[in-house]
Amino acid sequence: MQLIKVESDNSLLIELVQNGQGDPHVLVEVHQTRDLCRRNGQLQLRHMKQEVNSCAKNLR
Image (cartoon, rainbow, N blue to C red; front, side, top):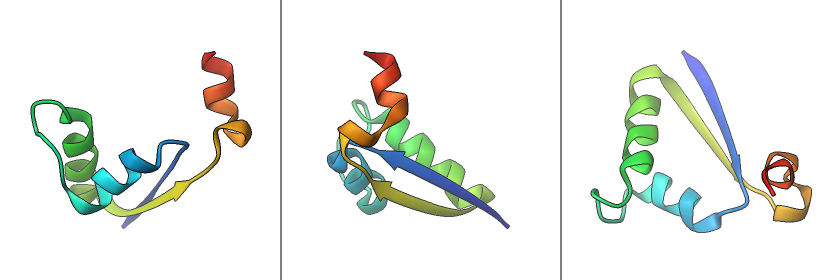
């Protein structure tokens, strides 16, 4: 079993992945992430503020 850790500064995205709500045509990535986690193991999601998200900082 594999643990997949996802950190995001987008709390709505985390909620959508965890709860499975949303339009499948708009949220393809959310559904793909959820499906990947179901097949490959455990999913751990964590919300973090944008100020401490170094990946997001580098994309600006």
